[in-house]
Amino acid sequence: MQERALPKNFVWGAASSSFQIEGTIPGDGRGPSIWDDFCAQPGKILDGSDGVIACDHLRLWPRDVELLSELGVKAYRFSIAWPRIFPDGRGAPNPAGLDFYKKLIDGLLDKGITPWVTLYHWDLPSALEKKGGWRNRDTALAFADYAAYFVEQLRDRVKHWITHNEPWCVAVLGHRTGEHAPGLKDPRAALEAAHHVLLSHGLAMKRIRELAPDAEAGITLNLNPAYPAHPGKREDEEAAHVYDGDFNRWYLDPVFRASYPKDMMQHYEKTGVIGAKGWDFIHAGDLDTIAQPNDFLGINYYSRAVLGDRGLEEAAARKDPKRYTGMGWEVAPEALQDLFVRLAKEYPAKAYYITENGAAYDDKLTAARQVDDPHRLRYYALHLSQVAQICARGIPLKGYFAWSILDNFEWAYGYEKRFGLVYVDYATQERIPKSSFHWLKEVIAANKVFDVL
Image (cartoon, rainbow, N blue to C red; front, side, top):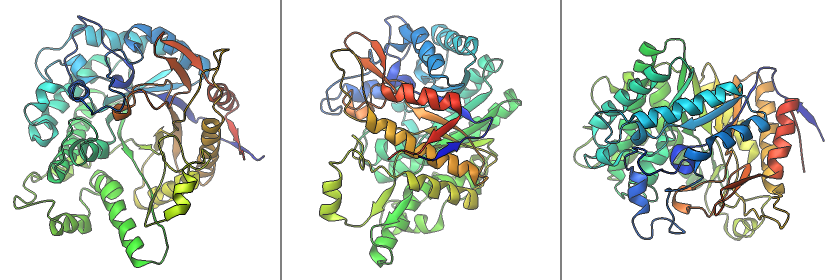
């Protein structure tokens, strides 16, 4: 096996999100979110569950901080529940919500763990959704106000801010396919939502710069490299190009270039997505606002997309956990390096961070209350080998956050999918580190990784 070292000051971290782990406590002052509303609709969540308890992180956060410390990470990326701070999206803040995050952040700092705060990870206050949610331009303004309030309150403790997690998911899964909250199936609404999320990023970046000039701030995009199933076949090449435009360039271009891809604008017009109203939701100056200079780009990477029919070969491969995860996503570590080579060339940033990377598998708790997860361990090893190679190229990849520290509420899948380094027994809320946790602990301590078969 080949040993690959990481740079000396490489940032090792783990990640989570508010709705997926926090749960609620009666009287905690948190307002409802669109995910509470979505969970209440029959058939929307695979196992019929909700986030009312989740991992009970509101009560058990000291144990979770201990786990992070045991893992050896020096950074923890977590998100703030907007309706926990402003139950109605705007108006009077909730003191209990702010107090919870202050305690959590202080607990992290006491353990030498740097907080990386994501301001939005999909749990929009229901009160704002009733006014049009992300289809309404006013939500972008409300987000900037919420961000400014929280940054002002925590700027003495927090020096790393992420405005949004995965705008593509907010727009497409929430507004085009209906798989996520708020559950709409309106392609034009998806474009409106995408624009207003990106606009709110730019507005929030301005406020962060004003309030915390010594902080580092950026945005996290989920990026999915696209490949034709049959290179050289025109239909597959075109499909891969459109997929890349819809999934990747539609979010990279405005952030880095203050423009949307012209070919994709034409595509949405020709396919009738944009409709008779045209691009009226894009106002003069919006794209300049979106393209605020970022201190870093966060990248969430899980797999690649292959466009075209691979037929029976692909169907058979999906049964192999070495080739496909429990989510049905292809294990494609080499595409991670392809992605970063492209980013460095086409979308150069001062720094990049992998803010999510990991895999779901069907983990089983043994009678001895242990969890062996060799496929997840292998997934991490293969991807971290690519991370080391990316760094060796001189690309400014500065850190890596494993997704996720805990098994949790996996959105529309409920509790059916487990991504965690730590197994959560939802009946007892016991936390049990998996074999991948112990392996990654050794990797972090050594700051090097080994290739595995």
